[in-house]
Image (cartoon, rainbow, N blue to C red; front, side):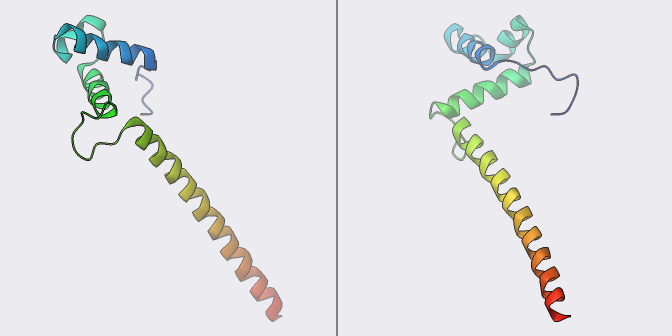
Length: 99
């Protein structure tokens, strides 16, 4: 998502757009056009909202699960980096003690 042309929408804006689809019975495309939002964006927000309510497809991750996965991936990367540093230090000291 590094595109400088990508618009950022607040969580309130996304929630309100999804509520509009739910409450009016209009299609995602119609509501998106009315709000000036891309239909692809609103479709994704709508699908995520359904998943968060427990109405999603089997295997879809809730927002909380996505956040936990992001946090765990970051933690795993940090731990891998720490392990690599420790490995290098161990090799260094092993060589020093052989002298």
